[in-house]
Image 1 (cartoon, one colour):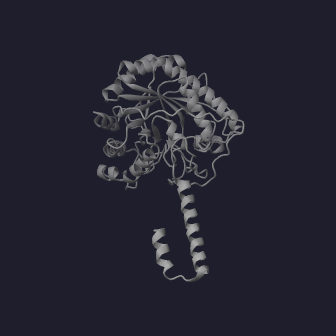
Image 2 (tube, rainbow, N blue to C red):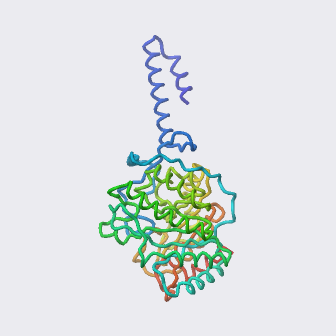
Image 3 (tube, rainbow, N blue to C red):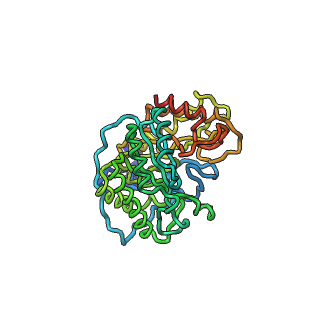
Length: 407
């Protein structure tokens, strides 16, 4: 198009002054095009890294947060963090895209604490999940930080699942022919007093935070290796920390040294996938995308409302040449909860049908287009009644929808 513009004006220009002006405009257009490409393209590993869109710090929400409705964007709103001068640049060893495996028909099992009856409860829950045709399970357990500016992360001796119970769970899942993903997840109780969530942490010492976090993740990587867990999720929704790409690449490289399974990172749905995605085995998204439908939407309407988000996810996959898994997907059993599925509570009243329709429609729209779904969430102790308003689908019609999806 630039060439056609130049040829069109050339016939009307006479004299060196006009030619010089046209040349100046042409150079400006070329420079502008180059800057746009540099800002929006993800270059291949080994080449200069293009700047990918960074988290937008003004939004106070996350995938299961009591916050205002977010707007997804691909546009950078802040400069990426300055690389840490004290951190050595250790490139992560690239791994080939793994041979496609069967669709990950998964669920998240969220476990706090170390119940004395852990083994029997885990066994019962896994039996139930096997009856739903689940072939993959994400074992989610909390890790902690003191506050949103703290520079350390730790496993709580009371509330974080211990290594013995993690090993017990993995073995029990393998007995039922299920893949296992280990997924340490930062608890937010200490962040809420300041009105923050895990996507807004701002450690006083970034280098200190990564040293602490890396040490914790490496411990779980060694445990995953010893127990033959198939994958490890190295982080979840750390929006404010994702810009420190080299630090994440250092972690990935270190984990590769002790763990031979697959690595992933669970990104918040509303921001672009972090630039170190090329170094992972597959991309994961916590997929609480809002569906633009009425409160009484049908399954067909809900399925159709996924179209723009499928295009977005396809963009992630195309950018990195990796397949995409939704490591969190679900909604509460409340009226219209699918409009803002990241909220813990909508205050709209019980609707088991709304949850069921969302699960059925999401399966219909997504199963043939992504490489796996992990529904959020199952617990060791299922809801006491079917009138429960939470995400947990057990003992509700949504449970049946999952079975039909995975059958």
